[in-house]
Length: 445
Image 1 (cartoon, rainbow, N blue to C red):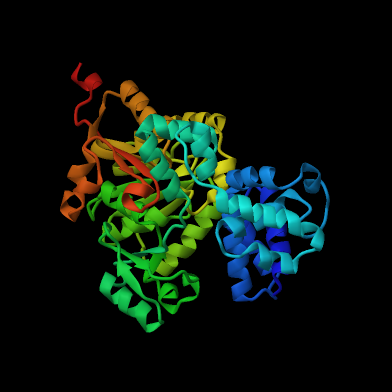
Image 2 (image 1 turned 60 degrees about the horizontal axis):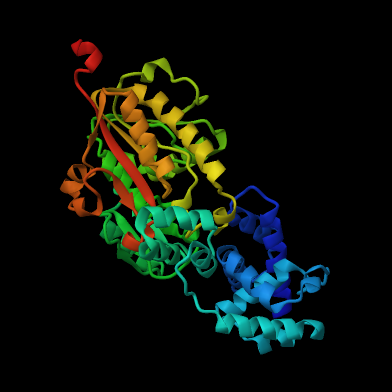
């Protein structure tokens, strides 16, 4: 397909994403299903450019304002006479996937001067500077996020985090050890022409050497694996339920961690998978059938009350709370521009309520794990510290202790479990492990 047509499709999808509340990958999938004439190479180019524009929007706009006359952004020409079209071309030039001459050959002559000017500014741009605004532009993140990360990690590490979050995430699989060993799954993948290597930390993970649609593979249909980030896999090991345990997965969603817990428990005990979203639980039921895990009890809840039969019965409770998701921006770059400090504050208040509610499931000496996939302390440490202050019957337990038997204790801190893309090449995860005391203060009084 001609480059001009590819740009047109890219612009169309980008505009759809701007007006849709769904994640970018969902919008892209829907678009490709209704445009089946697009070949695999075309789809790859379009998707990579769409994600590139999302990741680098702030930097691209910075280049555009220096290269393109303001009145050129007001037109409605199919290719370049609007801001989104300029962003697509600026991304191709910034990422060095095309030259200005190549783009000009495909586009109206009226756009040539702007394209060549963009190419000049993209080539001359150097990501330098130490102020919040300079770092925000260089790495294309909202200034408030950069400021928050500098406060947490310092300027140098904040920039490393920005760089890592702008890299596409690897495709990581969790081997379903109920059906196959890691080596058996690896060999089955190889028979379908797919190379994979063991993950660095998770003992049950494989990382693919190239990006493919794994859901079409026969080995996937047989239930040998699930697509799951390595950090998410380790979270199930942090919960570490015994095979005979009663476990509550309080925010189960589509069940990635539910199924991981089922494998850790060797398909024994019982897992109560709770969620407020019917569609997500329907997806979980499909995944349960494929995985062979038959110990999961799926329950839809209202998010305000708990089923009476779950109060005080659980050996382990996982509260993988809804969050801003900022630790997953390698996969979902569009959330850079939708999450705000106000959103973080609102979510943290919701998280506190969810943790408060589901803590009632934990029996004496039971384990409560609070987890998120965000980097913001307001959603992480602050929620946990407020909960512990209000609930002296719970106390922190070292996450390292729980990971020792898997030989990966060093991935965790002594107080909290925190993964970061630039340190571990995993999504950003946070978790706190809390144990309910055998005798509470109220009982001792």
